[in-house]
Image (cartoon, rainbow, N blue to C red):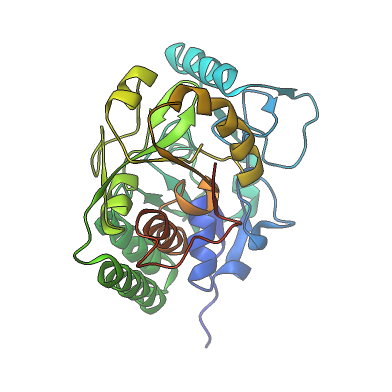
Length: 315
């Protein structure tokens, strides 16, 4: 008798991306309002933002369902202040439709426990998990953590072989980039995950920089992203600044980056703008391999292919 495919609800975009990579797109029966993979199209949306901001930012509080009804445009600074007020007041940034979640009767629910600001965490659903459902929590803050996430997801969904193959692909890609940049000086880099206020790249981002032949300043592999001052950023002495605002599409990030240029005038730095959603905001096989390749092309253009212009552009 054939084994029934699992019913899966993903509450985080990186989960949906990885489920598709494991060949489980047809098993996804519900998604978050932020899930933008093709397999999410037409699926019931289980989550929503509690802060009604819309605009270029698809970050912590933007409405990614595609609707801006009742939402107001907000600058990055306004978004940061609203999120900070909510966090300080102990207010959740997201809602989960528990009734819909139960109606969907999932066998597996995928959440994340990396960033309280970025997506629904496990605490919001654990107390009301549908009967018989298994909660898989994505926790990766490094490449080894990515492997752990794939192993857990593979076991829960019966796709252990596909998960192992995905991680093998990551290793081969990392090795290929390492060969390209071998023996070259490690250029000092700062990745900014937000512009107002500046947030330093954290978690897996400094590790990606190292794998691409760079040296990330002011934060190191595994450390969470943190606020910094512009004085601190400029004084660090990076050769290259990579602007990767969380959730921004490339065009919106480029527009904001031009406003940041005056802060870097006279510092003799390269400034690159990237599509953070597809490179740095999600620790998935596809995203990390693309990010390492883009970074290698930025840092060592004589050794690695140039970044695709739809993923990164110099300013």
